[in-house]
Amino acid sequence: MKDGHSWLFETMAELGLVGTFLMVGFLVTFFVRGISDLRFLGRSRHREVYGAFFVACIAFVLHSFIDWDWEMAVITLSFFLFAGGLLRYGALSRAAAAVVTGAEAAGETGEDVAVEVAGGAWTPRRLLSWNWLIGALCVLMMVLTAMPLIAENRIESATRLAREGKDLAAVGREADTAHKFNPLDGEPLILKALAVQAAGNVDEAERLILMAIDLEPYNDKYYRNLTRIYIQKGDGEEAAWAITRSRQLNPLESRDTGPLEEEVRKINGGKL
Image (cartoon, rainbow, N blue to C red; front, side):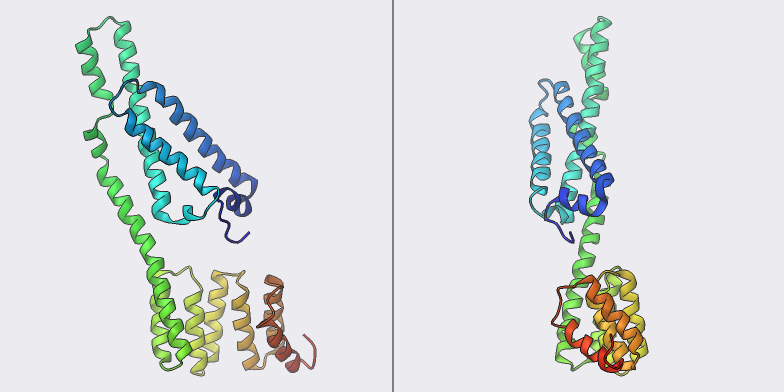
């Protein structure tokens, strides 16, 4: 599975039984703790807020099992912010309940109990003291989300320029910008390789494609790009290796692979 809609199924496909066990263990632990903390809230005026956050977390988890929007950072971040707030709220509520129980056992007055509870219970002001951390995390997540979006925009621009074939230097600049914003994506390197290949620098194009393959070794399209480079260089052995690897990764692709295999056979005297 390359891109599953379900958080559970994609975790099973990518991380196996160990990853699935850790994921399910986290969710079970969180929800068991959240439900157990409900009994400490009593008639707290914040009980409704706690319940709303708890239901929001349940809705996120259930929906993540059938759709893909859990992959959107802002949505998943909201879940973890709610979850973190609930766990902290629950811990303070348990502490306040322990104070009440201990004070009542010691025979303290209602006013004394109220003072002790106020010292350990959850309050809006105490929650706001964490705002700087929450704000910093939100800014960080926005930056991390914006960077791939900017890179994707530059990739689209470079692709359009490459199709027009008018300004190869501009293709290279757009590809470089995309690579700076998302250095883990091989597509900008491929686009720049196409530009330098069209400009006659085959060796540089080969180097860039190999860099892209290092980033995404299971992308069959990159091996077809590499095959074209080796065909242009007349290196039949390397071309045969590259197109064979592309076929292994994607046996169902035929539109590009078939013609390239024929060209490789011509170089190698009918052999692939």
